[in-house]
Length: 421
Ligand code: EPZ
Image 1 (cartoon, rainbow, N blue to C red):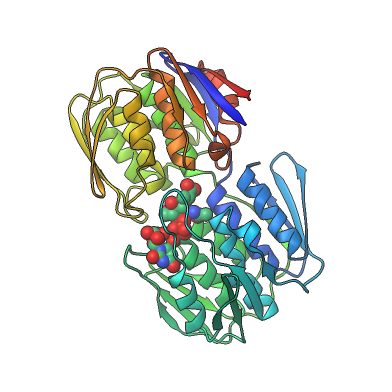
Image 2: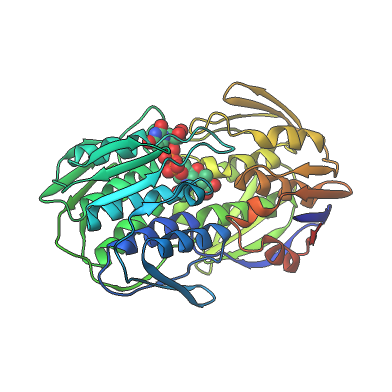
């Protein structure tokens, strides 16, 4: 099993190119199940989650191959199997995104309930509510699978839940509505850039979707989708992670291939903390004097502060000059990184969905355990500036969402090695 060894204390300087968005590419790959012709996707990152979705789509009768470093070619060749089995779905929650496309194109979808993960119980009630509103018949069958079938008819759906909008529920219901008879309106839809990118992909293949990026999305039913080419947006969470890497290490990093307009809540908080973020050459340059001001952060659906950067900012604020408050409103249990950061000398106190971050002068290297994708990234960031050596175990978590992060950090001056035992 791979682990990282990091020698801390080096300011990072240089340039990094952000990869394509994992959370845009995954639903767009699932949407290719609906296309009659070949789909060519560009700017697709080479991640374990992407390879996992490739495997699921191949089991569902698609040819999927990576023809160039960031290009996937996908084509439906057999529509007989409509079952996404538990052994695949349980390893990646985003697998549930095949439900809408299968039901829309094949009239049948059997998908294992995804179950929970390190950040929460991860229900899919909103996905199923939307499918049923469209006329889908939903049944929980033996083995914990959900069976959806039927011909779909456009309708108006309020898709907000206890925690607000749902990203993948919006994706699933929007895809299911593409071939539905008539017009579908999704109210309280997720506004994330990844949803906008999925809608733009579907439109490029012949769908008729408007309102993407807003809380109200309208889908006019069409008869079919063609094939075609599409380029996935850059990964705003990877970009935000490298912004924190620059700030926490008191360095200066030029971040290429990132859309600052997708990171306004993040750059606003970096500005509050005293970190300089400037537009540069279609991306950004981020630098920090090293003096970090405390601030308060509450995670919210987009355009609010993203939950996927909460752990990384906790590592950064652990070194601020004063106390910060971080409140997690999307996944209230998403704090597995707290105990590990405290092992490195941070002073974090969890009070329900809130963590009080008492700033300290320095973190100390230690062996720590990665738990979920973004918590792992936070531990890498902490290791970059901790005194001494940090060892991060179970880095397979981080490989799910970052393309060999150590190969991107080394040219910036980080002393990080991937080892196996
Ligand atoms: C997406 O997950 C992302 N994953 C997550 O990124 C991200 O953290 C999350 O959105 C929030 O932005 C992908 O896009 C593949 P939600 P998703 O449904 O869609 C509750 C990463 O690190 N909810 O928007 O699963 C849910 O429990 C991953 O890249 C219901 O109650 O998240 C949560 O509290 C981690 N019922 C809230 O809504 C439902 O049917 C938001 O979840 C669905 C969700």
